[in-house]
Length: 572
Image 1 (cartoon, helix red, strand yellow):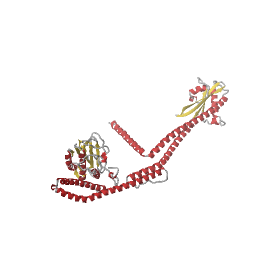
Image 2 (cartoon, helix red, strand yellow):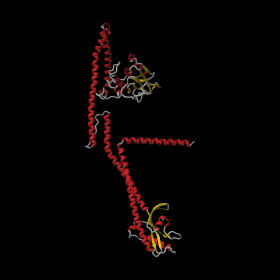
Image 3 (cartoon, one colour):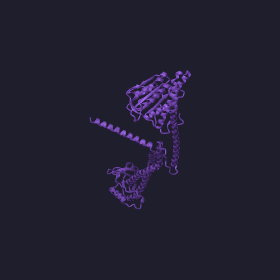
Image 4 (cartoon, helix red, strand yellow):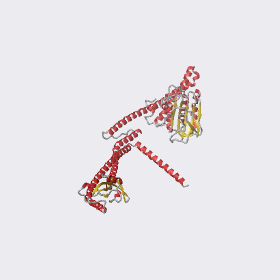
């Protein structure tokens, strides 16, 4: 009962630690990708650390080698000097007689206390302990700590050679590295084994001090290198960051932003080039703004000026049309054509006036809370006559009770344009109109199964005076302004107007609007791509779509003066 909660807490702790590690790693990766200065400093530190580690190892190895070589030379000199003194003192001593132990001890005492001030190399060997021992066997005499001498070293010295060996001796629980040097010493009756034990504690302290110095010096050098790399990199990165900030402000519409230019180096040349480019772009944008303003003013003026003569012509045409039964058949037909074309002309003029108001930014949104079922149904009924003429079935999925804050007039106009376009290009096949919603948005999808759209046309249909295909036979006008007005109406609502199409598989257009005016639109309840499933009124329902193809989305932008697509000469 106790182990289980403990295991759960352990697992949760491990999971939290992993999550924290993943978040830290992600944060570091983000900073690493975005900061050139951090990458340069860390790369400099990594390379400098590798160089310093290799250099430190080489220096430490060389210093240790020189210290040990010097120690060996000094100990050999001290051993040879001690051997000379012992041979002189033990020239008349027989190691095998009784009382020889005392003679050996006295000889070692004199060796230890002897002054070697006239032998600098021997004195440099430092403190030592001496050992004298006869050949190993029962009753062999010895003086000094002979048990500290390794057996293999004794075998080599007993064979008559000068030998040395590094060992580690333990004294009072402390390991002491020791260099043992041995050689045979002649006496009156045979040879003795003579050893000097030199502790290497001083050398060990020297090497430790050298290692600490190398580590501390390396760390200080790394810190200095990091500071230097940071300062040097900052001199390069700071102007680049400044240029990026100025470019961002320039892209946001602050066309007067320029880079400060100081000196004559590469950064200064970059600033001069950027400023020249910005001035050129600003000049071109202003020219486009002036051209766009002139174009919009011309459209507005022409639209207003045409209303007076159009009203006069309309009055005359209505008189002729009212008395058409009294006219000859040819004149009667001419009066009917005149009225029909005047209707189309008035519609075109109304579109031009609406475009002028939208371009001038004076269009008003008369939003009210309405049931989208009635709005869409009225739009469909407005073009049902065209559908009946072409024999196009209209398949509707319009649930009731879908309320949203919209301008009914503008939404009806958008849906009417969508359905009329689907009828024109559906080639008599069924046209599907689907209404769907979720908690935040409402969407209308209009789908035809006609000739579809060629690659790239899904975006061009929204441009002013643009058409997907000029050779199509149209029944609903074809002025090229309906899409431009529709996309501006969608923009006023803060919504999306998107298109999809594939050759021979038809096209789909989707309008997505917020249910509460001012809310952001982040998704749509009706998929636009191939084989979607749509949520209609809270339930899942099938939506006819093509089996293959790629949707093209045109998100409604907020155009600034002079950069609207219809102001570009290279677009239809």
